[in-house]
Image (cartoon, rainbow, N blue to C red; front, side):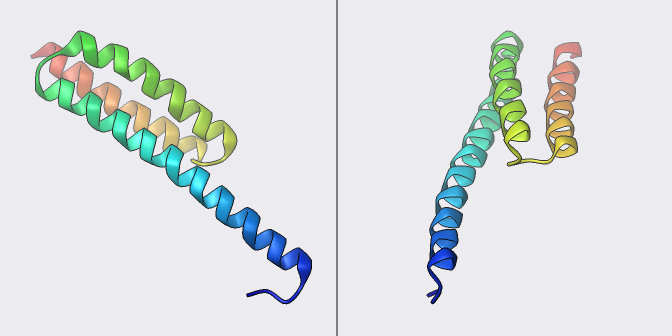
Length: 89
């Protein structure tokens, strides 16, 4: 436990931020898994609508600094590629 008052405040803030970031990352994983499940079930139109919400969430996370910009772009690209491949088949 920190001895200095400002250090203890910083520790409390760190815990709050960690919990918020974990919640956002968990939401991203959930939406991505839902999209991949729809792709596996060949429900391409539904997957595309869920992909739009995934884009919204991932852009917000990148804007807030939870994810790096390139990581967000890579994840969006990866999921979009999967949908496009499934749509062609």
